[in-house]
Each structure stands twice: as C-alpha cells, then as structure tokens.
Length: 94
Image 1 (spheres, rainbow, N blue to C red):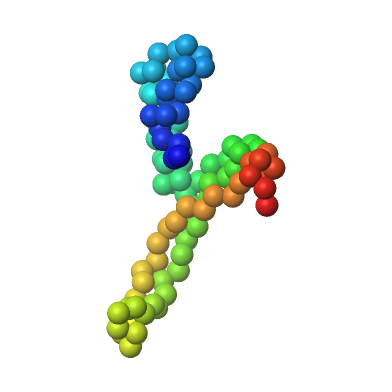
Image 2: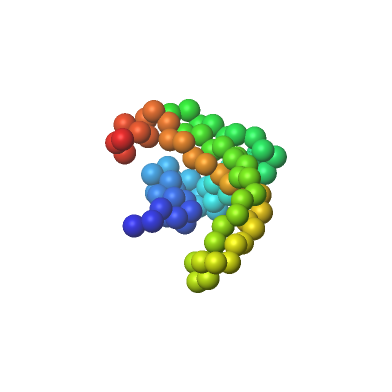
C-alpha cells in the first residue's frame, strides 16, 4: 500500500472527528510550505522524523545507453535528499 494524501486525511478525520476539508487544507498548506522552503534552498527539519536537504549536483558528462560512443552533457541541477531521523531509523531499522 502507498500512503497517499487522501488516505492520510481520511485517517486523521476518523481518529480525531475533525472535518476532512479542514484537515486537507492543513495537510496541503504544510506541504506547500515545505516546498517553498526547499525552493529557497533551506533545509526542512522535523525532529525524530528526518531532514530534507537541497543538494546541488554539478554538471557532468554522461553516455547515451543506446549509443555508448555518444557523450551527453548533463546540466547542473538541484535535488532533494532525505535523511531519516533517530525515531524513524528505530522503526524502520538500519
């Protein structure tokens, strides 16, 4: 099973008795703020859960798998790395 936003909203509503629409707005706003922070290059840290970090990947040369002789320039880009926190590591295992 995949944890979806819809499932999360439904589960929180069932456990708390709160309105699904209100929960959806809070979940969506939380995700929006996380994205905004990462877009600004800031780290997002949730104690015991984990840290989202923006990493900069340098430009590099790669190869076309269908034509190994052909060199392809891969441009620099940003990517997001997630590092699990202490409690998550305990639940999931190393």
